[in-house]
Image (cartoon, rainbow, N blue to C red; front, side, top):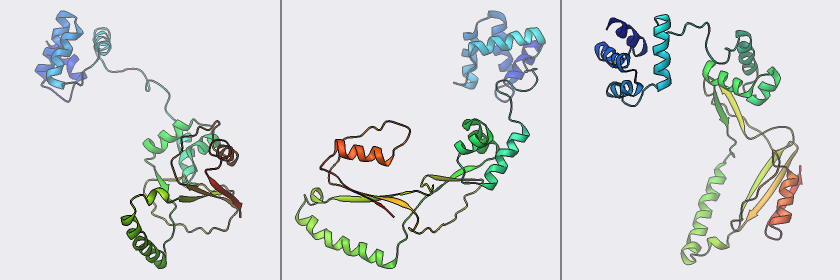
Length: 247
């Protein structure tokens, strides 16, 4: 019984009574059946049960070495990241917190998943999304309030009014490399506000829709102006008005 007690207390040291645990693995010692061990463990650990393979490996390790502890040097699996690589990733994001993980992996010749895991798990960095918003002036709030009163009465008199309204939107594509999908990596949210003026070289796309169209599939890694123009001309010709202007 002392042998079984040492064997089981190494496996499950934090839950269950030692006498109960030793009795569980004593059943495997006598019957050599993993299902009996799992049934007994279910009363103590519920659904968090070891697999048949794990039970057999623990048992064989204890018989051969007298202990089920992993005596191999280091850790199993891939080798740990060196301190030099850790410092390189850390210094890279301290200099440029807006840098993407893909760009950092290319610069340091590392896997993108490795960079992402180091930022989240080792450095405890979190990606803070940069959200672009339109600045509202006092007159803008008044205009929205006036529009509400102007549209309210016609909508009450004509329930089909919304189907006759054309909804439009405008998108800006910067040619200077500025992107909307930006993340600022850091241990805390910087809570910063950046003001930008619409005076750089860019492409403005105006889009007006009066109904819902079928989905479109693009071939390639990214959507470009040429692929968008082909979609407009091919699938939705005569239904969409678009204007391209370079400023």
